[in-house]
Amino acid sequence: MAQPAVPLTFGRYEALFHVASGGMAEVFAARLRGPAGFEKLVAVKRLLPELADDHFVTMFLDEARLAAHISSPHVVQTLELGRADDDGALYIVMELVVGVTLYDLAVAVIDGSLGALPIPVVAEILSQSARGLDDAHNATTPTGQRLHVIHRDISPQNILVGADGRVRVTDFGIARAVMRSTQTQAGQLKGKVAYVSPEQAKGKALDRRSDVFSLGVVAWECLTGRSLFNTGDPIETLDRVKELRIPNPKELREDCPDELATAVLWALSRDPEQRCPNAARFARAITDAVPERPSKRKLANFVQEHAGEALETIQKRIRSVSSGREKTIMRPAPTSREESSRIVPSVAVESGMQPLIGSPTGPPPASEGASEEARRVMGTATTPAVPALPSMGTEEITSTPAIRKQRNGPERAPGGKKLNVVTAIGLAAWVGAAALAYWTLAG
Image (cartoon, rainbow, N blue to C red):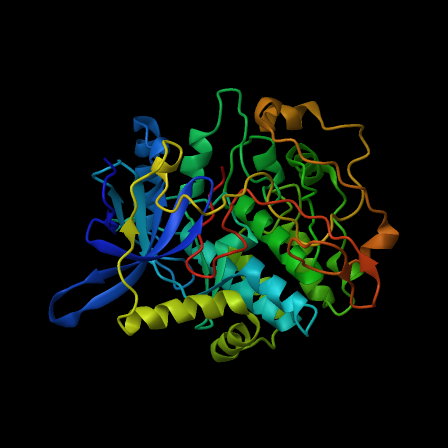
């Protein structure tokens, strides 16, 4: 006899609606009720219960406890950790951010009338992100002990641009637990590689400068509207991280100030000793290069105007909650063993490489095939097959349109030229769908 559906709760939090699903987690908006009509809306990330072996649980909780010590207006706050009584799934209760990921905002802007993210907007988003990173890197325990937090997974999907004009970095602590869980004794790295630092790609010890490099990749892509290293093939992408010549952003976008291009290239120095030493210095270099940036209110207005359907959908659900029309999610009884680990099994979960931002930049490394080191780090036995992408010469770099989502059929470039946009589906499956409290996991 089938089991009846039951309300979905996470400890004292009742789930209100599903936000997104990925290969390792599901995200829900939830509510905490209290006396005298008190209510607080939060976001809950539920990890799939098959991940909850004792080794992973220990690592995950250790890392999440570290993340809970980060106090910053530019970092998504971790409120609570828990483990479900029924299936043992780990979950994290976090600050609810009504907004969009930087990736989704960029896509909406490029597909809209502007055609490119304005330089002042890019500078403000990057400077706030860098300040959040710096706050995390300098986080301490209540007794003043340095935590030495490193994000390890900075990407446009882990930067949230709120409808309140505030930018927040998310997923601190989680990336390292996942990486340690999926890393073999031979040092194989599983997951996203398009934003890793060269030292991370080589399996070396990391410090805060690794995150600075990753944010530099984000900066370069937001300015140019192209993927810097990502080709859709994880092994080839890893080789490009280590070998590809990094073009000056001004080569692809003439209105980029020289000082801003210099700051981005500083963050992208492959030698950590020559790189921008910390996120605070990077933030200062950006603000010095672009002193005229939007205020918090103007950035909020920009998000409201250009974020598109993703933000509208979330805000509509929030209004429905406030009016009392949104009810607690009922957890259906699973119809198969495969579905039993997911609350929302009907949602398609993507897999593979992280989505491309525009077309790949320049040709792949001159060496024939992927390096042995890249294959060792990635682990060829588990690398998904991805169709090879055509290399692009430098003459094509300046004429290719900016950030595009996956499309069917040709796109028309701003100049009227048609081209097929090559995309690869992201490891973080919920990248393109959610605008609310986005947390991407490598997996």
